[in-house]
Amino acid sequence: MNVRIDKVSKTSIYLQIASQLKREILSGEFNRGSTLPSERAMASILGVHRNTVVKAYNELKAEELIESKQGVGYIVSVGGNKGDCETDEGRRLHRSKNKKVNWVNQIKPGYLDMEITFDDLFQRFGAEDKYSLGSGISAAGIYDNEKVAQDIAEIITAEGRSQYFYSPYKGDKFLRQKLVSFLGTKGIKASTGQIQILTETNQALDFLVMLLVKPGDTVIMEEPVSPDAYRAMELAEAVIRTVPIDEDGIKCDVLESLVEKHNPRFIFVNSSFHDPTGAILSLERREKIIEISNRYRVPIIEEDAASELVYDGERLPPIKAFDALDNVIYIYSFSLTFVPGLSLAFVVADRELIRSLSYLVSVRMVATDWMSQKLVARYLEDGTYYGILDDFRRNYSKKQEIACRKLEEIKAAGVDIEYTRPRGGVYIWCRLPAGIDCKEFINKAYNRGVALLPGYVFYPFKNGGRDHVRINYSFETEERLAKGLEVFRQVLEEELAHKK
Image (tube, rainbow, N blue to C red; front, side, top):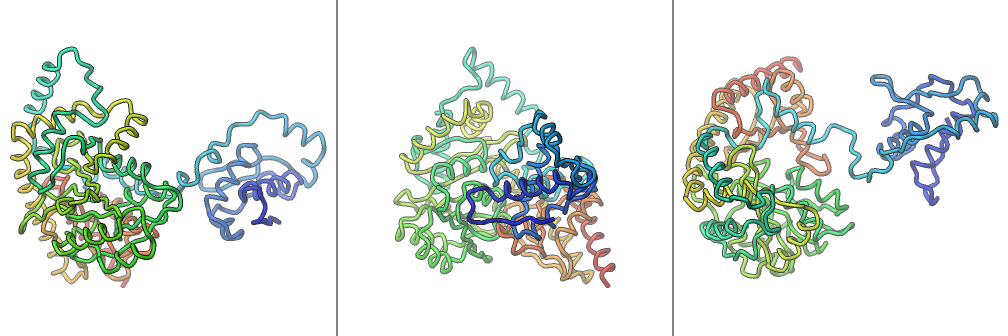
């Protein structure tokens, strides 16, 4: 094989690789049935990204020169002895074939991650035969199912002949009025014209990135950070700069130096019961980050879904509550405190930004979730939501106690794990014993019936977290949570015994 890459050529690198391999296949350098190097091996040989090789191989597959076989790799599917494909007749027959569109090469590179992704891992949590200790989903059984069904029926009946699935692009006006009051309980002053209703935090962040970020722009994020957040930045081709966090949240001294040096488009902060660490941004740092934002005229995007879930100590006001200049874009989600399966989030920001965001929503969506909006508005109006928050706090607090007790039992048995018990939220960030890799560990745990998230997925550059897992205790019942953590302990002990 003799493939040479010309980096100054206007021809894409993947097409250079594909055309040279095609020439060697048609000239008989590879016999029918020959195996090409694996994607990783070829990428290493040529010094290119794996996705570049994927695109080159798919170009050859589209031309039916090679085929892929599970467990074998890429196999040459034409030719025989050297020179058999080199005749004019052979080339004519090959050119005359109808050819399938090479869809892999049509897709933008950022969407071509062929490895196991966060989404693949997340799909594991839906398996009924697994203990789900990774999914950030609200607990079932807090809302009364019969009451919810009756309320939905009354909403539909009351609406009569209206178009149920259509609502204003900013969101239902009555809901936005109720949210103004809800925000007041958090120390945030806003009008209905400063609120945009959306389905979930991911959607809100995606729209905001679409609105604000151009390729090459710098954004600053905490590290570790939710994969959903940093992937939105990656797909927008932003340059991600990360700031480490400690028990008091993002380190503001490091943050300020990065802001001064890189002039970012915005700072992304998960302020309360941070995903995945459970840390809460201290009051002092909340005030400091507003000071930095105001001094350098840099927006803050604050994600605040877990702020109501405080089990120990006082609830801190959001960063947005300190925002006198409308420099903070605030995202709140009902994902951990509403009926499982019904999703709703909203954005609070400067009126001009919300106007542009609403226009973007009108272009991208036919309608927003009508039923969830009506139901949330109803429960904010009659006080149901405020009362149910106490039920969620009691439920999650008790589950956190069970999780921490099980982890303490593991430590008492001599297993060297570390964690900090958060004051609230639904996540525990657990360091595994030395020598245990989280990726291998979660696969073995999954085979034994426990679904977890590995720590490395929370690092945009995969340069940390290999010794951590994120434990979520919101979704499972108390009994299943305890059983899942018992399996967690057994797998840990087996791994340690195996490594001795």
